[in-house]
Image (cartoon, rainbow, N blue to C red; front, top):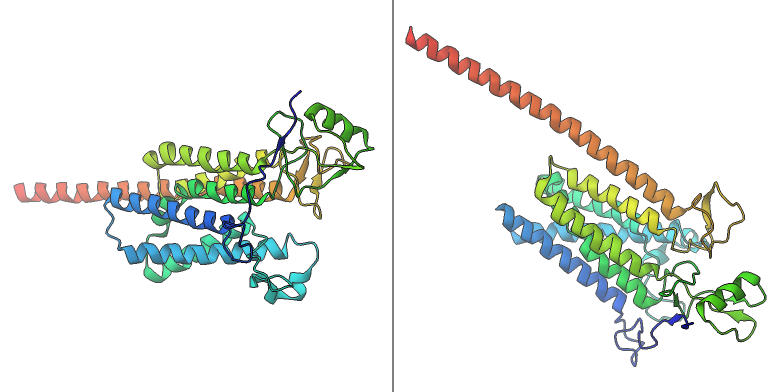
Length: 340
């Protein structure tokens, strides 16, 4: 039996591992790449549609979105997911990118759902200030974001964080920073044997699903392909792509959460299956994490938004048709009067 895949030892969070004190990390670079790709895809759509918006308008729109995203992601990531409560007691640390020893740490703890909320608020405020057609801009952004998001998850993988649940599948990976388990436990010995992991000592680092790569593939590339090539060319009304992205991401992420280990301090939020289920192993589809709860709300919200926009679009189409029919009736009446 082949041994479990080891996390590549040559991968380091720092771009220059021989100068770890420098604030140059792959995770931050992945964010810049994500923003850049999303920007280029958005700008392509503006040109393709022949929209008369300046580069300054587009840059300002993106800057507002990025600022909102970072603020929202950081607020939710620290205030909701941090178990120590330190950010509630010392809120100035939320945006303080240095550790206790003065070393640069960056913003460790970013929530996707918080980032999405912040992004929406940021671009809505910008659109309102410049009197932009918000839904048109939001649709173009929605079909561009997933491909950029792919690189954010690759950044998580490079950091060796947000790993998945323990597994013995052939592609499971041993992450250096993951929790070790007691070798005396029967289930630990069973998985170690099936995964080809040698038990040395009292604690064992078992292989896990590389859930960061699952998310990069499905929340990123797969969702982008669906939105870009299926949704974008045939949007029935404004706002459809926004709803499709929110609901699509919610569905994909909900499923992938079964492979991702929940936050240790939160565990499973809803336990309809096995109340004593371990967060480290998949045992039942009826125990749900905080991520799944938020994704369920996203899916409902996205589908609800599509339904509302469909009704509004249908109503507007009916009003336009009625107005056009009235205009044609008046013109017909005028022609009859002229003939007399």
